[in-house]
Every structure is written in structure tokens, then in C-alpha cells.
Length: 331
Image 1: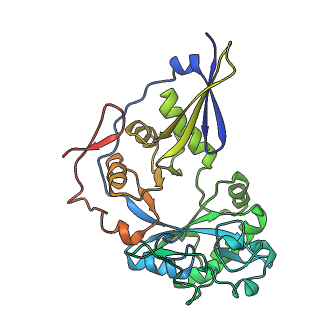
Image 2 (image 1 turned 30 degrees about the vertical axis):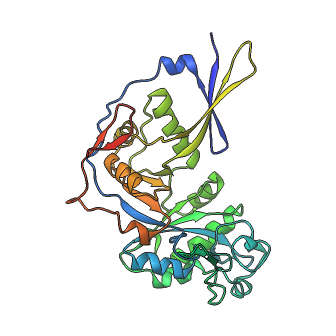
Image 3 (image 1 turned 45 degrees about the horizontal axis):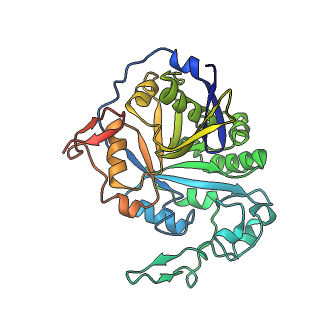
């Protein structure tokens, strides 16, 4: 029977010919690096600890020992790179509309912590920043106070690719900070816009990383990345497998997939100086599993909580690989 298998990840449909899968490409060694403590990256500067992408959140992450900050970037009507993620201002602030509809001076009037809530021990939910407003900051304001030993990941969240690249480049130029920043986006056009700036350091596109991890997991095929590649993907991702059959329209199965494995790390480490970053690590168990794989860094929502379970080389538990290709702690 000749039929096709499809994997759907994050809205993308990835076709794989089943016969080709069974006759998979070359089998590669599955020797991964020794377990090592991954660096912590503060997601949106610590979205669980303080209003995301604000200077208050960034300062909190730094105070909790995190030296790598992941921030979302959009561009204002007057061409200023600012730290904000959602499409709508009403999602997080007391304003309405789009970032692109405001000048930076107008954005300063809004409270970026308006929707941030916190549940007390009694279960009561409060909004602690409604009485102490925090602003949407510019990228330059963050650069102004970034410690010398800290670095940034800039996640471009706009469909104004050229304007965003121009605004970010101007800020990095003025602060001589190109070596302290790396550019990421889920939108390939946003990465492509930075190709006009020779100093820009870019992630591999999300589409390329997703296809790479799927090929390793389902085809057992290693497409070696280029030397020096930076790539990132979620620890867990909802996946739908769809078969199109001759006498049946479609049959599907779903899974909460973990695409990171020793095989994946062995493939990535076939190239020199590859940096693997895992998104969505917010439990000690997942942190230790990622450490066992030898990934470079993990993205956390709460640096305050993560500092309680981060490890150094001396006390990192020994981790082993199970027959299922995941890691179990050897207790």
C-alpha cells in the first residue's frame, strides 16, 4: 500500500512518504554530550514573575542570577524598537490598538502591567501593578542598563520586517551591542530583513528547525546543521499524525510530542559550535531531562523558581536514556 503520512506541528503540515521513511536515510550515531547544566534564559524577562518584557521583569531576572534575557520586539509608528509581544495592546495594558499605531511618547502613557495578576495563598487574584504602573520600554532603555556579562535574544513580533530590522539595528549600533544580541522570529521574513545587516547574528528559521527535528524523530535521518548554528524549539509540542488511505479519507492520531532526544543532539553536534535552546522548561523534571541531553540553554518563565532547581556540574544527577528515547533519572 502506498500512502502518505503527515505530521502537523504548530500549524504546519509536514509530508513524509511512508515507504521512504521505512527505507530511511542513513542511521547515525546516538552518542550525545555528557550531561551538563543548561544556562537559564528568562522568557520575556520572566513572564511569570513580573509584567512581561518590562524593565521590572528584566531587573528581577538579573537579580535572580539569569544573565540571558529573551525579549519580544515590535516597532512604533515613529520607528522606535520597543519590548512588547501581543498583537493587541489590550491584551496586557490599559490601552487599545496596535503598537504600530502609537508613537513611543504615546506608549509611555500606558500601563504595561495592567493585566498582570497574581493569586495569593487564599486563592484570591489581585492585580499588583494597577497601583504601581510600569511602562512599555524601548530596546535602548534595556540596553542602557544591561550588565556587561548579560546578553539578549530579540524575538521580532511584527509583520513590519524592514522597519523592525532598521529600528533594532539603530539601537544596537548606538550601543555597540551587536555581539550581545541574537535575532529570532517565527516569521522567516523578519529574519531575512536582518540579512542586510552584516553584524546581525541570527537563529536558524523555525520552519527549518522544526523540519530538522521531525526528520530525526520520524525518518531517523540526520540533516547536519551548518557550523555555528543557533536553533530553538519547544520541549513539548502538540502533534497530529494524519494518514491518507486508498479506501478511507483520513485517519488521525494526536500526541504531546517531545522531539528532543539523544539522537537529535547527536545529529546537531555533528557540526561545530551548534547551540541548542529548548523552550518551555518550567519544571525541575524537564530541566534535568534537558540537562541529560546536553542542551546549551533552557527558556524559563520564572527565573525566581528556576534558581531553586538549577544545578552545577558538581551536583547534577546522573541521567540515563530509556528504551523509548527519552531520559529517566537514575535514582
